[in-house]
Length: 79
Image (cartoon, rainbow, N blue to C red):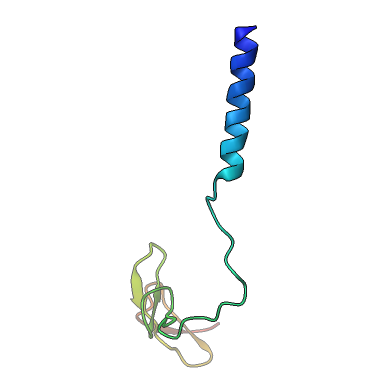
């Protein structure tokens, strides 16, 4: 009988703690975006992008009909 009462008490306390916690409160939807935030490409800045291993690499702009090479340093013709 003591075990049943202790289990019921533990379950009730656990449910009370779950309902009272606010791990992620909801934010209002009508907030305007802050004007002091500057969007950049993946955190690297303008003219740069993230490489396959997460490092910042420069963006080389190849002309139409060309594509950048494996490391983005040369332009190769599309075939």
